[in-house]
Each structure stands twice: as C-alpha cells, then as structure tokens.
Length: 168
Image (tube, rainbow, N blue to C red; front, side):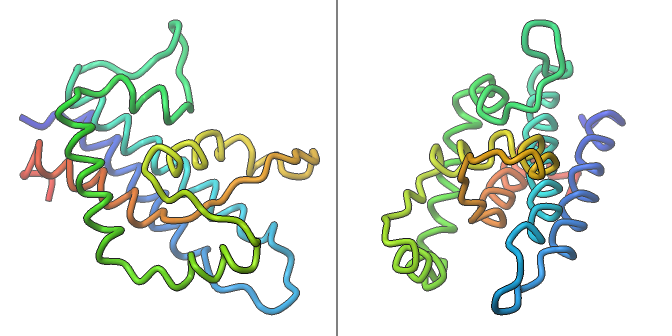
C-alpha cells in the first residue's frame, strides 16, 4: 500500500530529476565546467530522495542518522533491506551492460585514468554532491566524476516500481 508521504517523496525526486535533465545540456568547447554543477546538485538531491523514498517504503519512517536528517547517500543505501540492494545493483549492472560506454572510454582517455563504474564507486561519487556542488565557489578541491546518473536513477526507480507497481 502506498501512502501519501511515499508519493510526495517520490514526486519531489521526480521534480528534481526532471530539472537536472533540463539543465544538463552539452557544454561548448572551452566552457566553464562549473556550469554543470546546478544540474549535478539537483540530480544528487533526486538520488537522495529516491533512496529516501525506498527507505520510507521499507520502514515507514523518515531516514535520519543520529536523530538528524542526512544527505548521505551511502548511509541511506546501507540501511535498505538486503533484497532491495540486490535488486538495485542487479538492475544497475544490467543497464551498464546494455549502455554505449563510448563517453566513459573517451573520458578515461582524456583523463588518462581508469574509471571505476561499479555501483559502490558511483554512489560514493554522487554522495555529498548536494553540498559540494552548491558551494563550489568555496574552492573545494574534491574531484568527483558525476556520471551514470540515468543508470543509478533508473535502478532506484526499478526497485520502487518493483515494490509498489501502483506508483508507475
């Protein structure tokens, strides 16, 4: 059974996700990469809300760490049921397997480093982006690869719809 609160959390995630996609337009040659931060911040917030929606579905309470609301994606994910995590990861790898990885290969070549596209690595990269991206002007030197958002998002939505088909 879906509650109004579940629908509201998921609805907020969808709003932020849609806004992130609208803001995430290709950069022109030489354009400032900081221009991507608003879309990344919104995407990170959407991931947080998708995870919190799953957490709420499973536990019927808001996610809190030490009695406080938290933006930590890894902490929220770790508190999910093991069966949920298995479905999320399985769907993520299925999406990666069927994805054209040319952009990732080009990025690896340009940066001259291998990119770990594993689910734990991508979740870690997206973790904290909500804070990091909105305060980029403070000169944080924490380099993060904000990639594979659609695949992470779709794996979370897949689980939500698996648990609550009525939300589809």
